Image 1: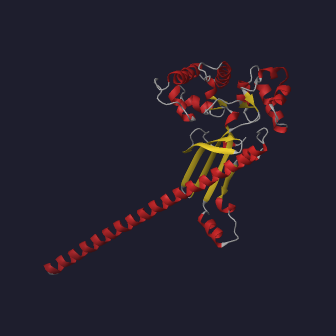
Image 2: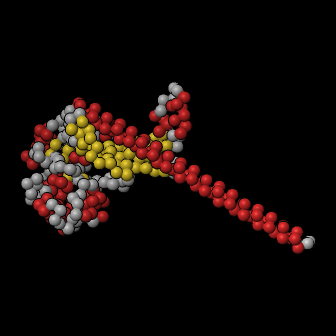
Length: 319
């Protein structure tokens, strides 16, 4: 083979290699751009779908609020939504719905609404006029003891919250906590936060404990003199006969009913937490919202992406 032919063959091979490399790079860039665009489109669509789920939850709470009366765990708002295909919610009587159903074939929605007044409220620890609220302190102290949590953390929490109340921002704690995870900044460890999360919450204002929706440990802690057996008996009773008013609860409790008062206890609620979780192919999006129901108005106070302020799994949402 002549030298010029060998050089030409080598140049041709280098050219083919270069073209193949450039083509592969271009194909990879195009694939990556498509995947990024697809992921962004799915993310935006997921956000809109979860917004719709939140609006639907607010409508359910509004309709329930229009009926007035007590709030309890056999009402429609308290039934959690197990993971279900979104396409199953779409009517198939027109072409557009059918096309949307195909797009959402791999989309699954789950979530639920929880009564936040069925939990002990950290905000209750500090009186509006300043100072530590004795009844709230006793309730949390009893809960800490039941869970085997260090009492010094409760004392630290109270002192930090009291400092924020009396001194504003002139404390080591820069911002007053608004969501559950933020309590780590005011004296509670991660272990304590996780242990307390099924029984306590933090709300914008002091609230009474809803005896129709609270778990046994919260009821035991919230009613002075009540033991675990009494709390479980109360739950067994309300399952078939929810309390219509506070007087019903006081009557059923008998001698312990004198410890129940309208400031610390109730049978209806205004604050609810809505959790929506969308699983779409490999994407999982979860949003948590706190809503406030005031008569016929249901307002969203905050909405965050992720499981802030809720138990680790959606299974704990169910009553």
